[in-house]
Image (cartoon, rainbow, N blue to C red):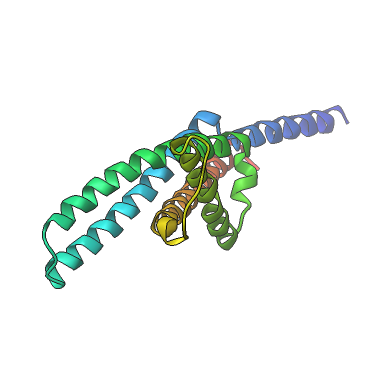
Length: 179
């Protein structure tokens, strides 16, 4: 009876250690969120460069469109980092990795799309001294599209990295303990 109880206790200890392995540290979540932001920015750069090359090579537009695209990307990348500081970083720190990894892919795309909007409005508020006003939607439509692209790719990459880390932790824990 005592041996059965000690085996039960040992099994509970292994389960406790097993669940602790699934915890992803806040520093690692921030690193994954930053990698996601860089992936989103890289996707925007590819989009802007492709558009500029298409206009220059196929449509006969002036070659300065390529340098304009690079300059626009650098400016947007700076502002996307500011948006990440105000929205992406708190999201990575406030929501546990376990809850984020449970999202389905379509829901993750929707969450990524929605997270870009507050980041954009925070940047507008910072630049406009807390006064946001536009004559029409066309003035911000392009920025909104870029924001949606960057935030969606960023969140999906963040989710993929979290899931990969969770799977890696499960593999390590299953090889560490004999079942």
